[in-house]
Length: 485
Image 1: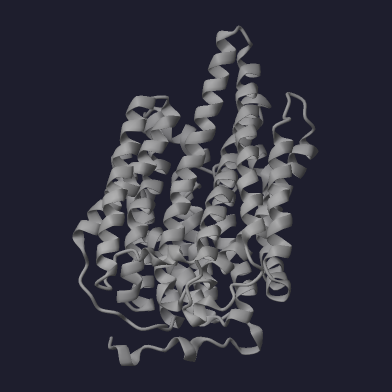
Image 2: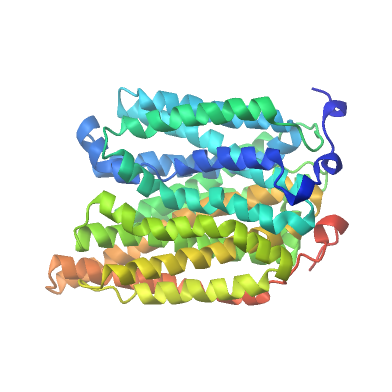
């Protein structure tokens, strides 16, 4: 397909009557389905251990490998999305996801299932930046908050809903149903997308720098893997892998700075010269750590300490997750009308209050109180994510949208891995110390969880500080290309 056949951003930019452009609705739906699979395996681990005769540590690789692949592939998507059409990127993403899902549904062994998860994740890694980049190209600045509110359903709510959805599906059959149910839905979405999707933006043709590809994959992949190893308690090995990952990322950064002078970076780091974008990046990373940490700790508390079933646990956290999704469009409209600070500052404070409340969990805390704290956390995250996404990407020039989205999604994976490693390591270390002091096992586990929630509450102070530094509007940086320093 030639460049002349592509729609320009201007021709696609004005959705009639303030409605969300069809291309965005299609991409949001597709992204929701593919991101849901990042956390859908959490409740299936006991079934997998029994069916495939594997240990819990081995089964965890089905989630770890998904996250590793995302971290390794996403850095390449900034380059990729500038060099293929929208339809080609969509076909690639959904084709990989469908292949991985079909393979997983019939996987005869753990090794095949693990490979299928890697293929799934490769498609998901392309879909997330594709959605964000396309949105910034086709939606006028005055309507981005409302449309980004719809996008938050896919970006934020899908991973939160994964354990709940899997808990319900697993009541009706084996772990294979998780993929058998998703496959026809994803196939239908893919068909509709290929039938209706139009190309937006212009194609930029250039060669890929393989040193950048290798160092990005090795660096971010090793960093996420090393952080995940902290969960198993093998701290020296984990620290060595993290150090190797950071060294590879350092080489990657130096290489990008060199390629930027020639105008052909794999990941354009000039996005970080925009103050609002950088603050948004930090704020989103820490907020995502808080969400992932609570997603891990709260189910552990409810199942291991309060002895609820996976389904009961999923139902208890469902109201908060649903509230987060349903509030997305409302938050977006409020952003368009009043700007970001009126939402982000209260949202950041709400995150801090919810995590502070969860530090007080006990053996008998009423379930309505737990539900309320979780709902407060999810609603506060909804009030934070949409404005921060919009302000961050709106602060950079349109030529950097794909790179800005790529960096943001890469750090989201790193933040998820870091948040997981942090809460598990702190919880385990505290619980072991209490057990050594003669504290009963359940009370020791509870003490570990409470300390992990304290760490989350301390991190939320960074979210509050970042919220106070953000402007209410992106100040038209994307349109002017002006760099804020």
